Image (cartoon, rainbow, N blue to C red; front, side, top):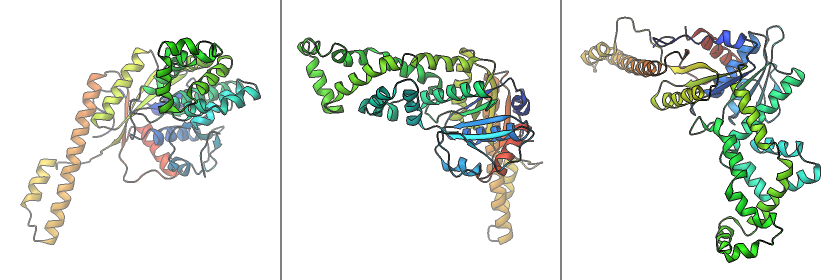
Length: 389
């Protein structure tokens, strides 16, 4: 399989990165398809070739990204990448989302010190900020909003590249803010916090209605202080998080602006392309700006006249007792397997293109080794820009 799949327009990565109207670039797709490496390579190329001031926000806790950027570590603060000669005014910084620390920052920035300390020490808040389903995705949106505000305020960056959280469903990144807001506003929370909101006066009535049995079950599952913790948390957060949902809505709106571009990343495999198809359809339905698809880890072949079937026939005709012929037979068998993989990937890619006409595509060939340094990231950037030529 070579370059852009037949029938698809070519995704011009350099045109995308060089367009200074684009200020947010979101990389998304299924887990394990190379999103983090692609995001870093795009950020590096934007800074080193196009002179952009770039911040790469990654959600991947693996140390390999920090190492490949020449950094000792990545955390919730942006760290400059210095082991690169950038073009003109180009700069590159990177950071890794700390879900709980970002939540803490929201509390600290929207509450007085006493109330913030009360919320941060609350056991229910600690559980919510560390392990509630969707919190990571919500905090990725929150951090993107913070970075975007900072960029507008002081010009620190003119391009933010976002590596979306690894999740079973790529749509979680867009759905998490509404889901978390609904949870905090929902009926379940209102029921649990009714005693706290009424100063305890309603507890007798609720108990008479069987609520006491309900809470005793919850106490056994979640601990005896559940109602107190939840009630205290909601009471404190009511005045502090008046803009909780509004900030999520503002960042969601940012993702729909023409200054944002989505790049969907997929491997040429059924599950990854199925996930990519879901996301392409969701972006279209929500009127979000899709730049195109990066087809990553594509098997490249230059077979000439020797196809898979012919290679297997020749391999089977050789004498396995002769060392030279045995070695040649093994090589031909490997060649046939590679050809089969390339053919299968090509068919999958063409099926995707047929189902989503008009989606621009660029292909990146599979590499023999993982990326472990700046040179490797720069090489991926060149392949992204050239479409694997």
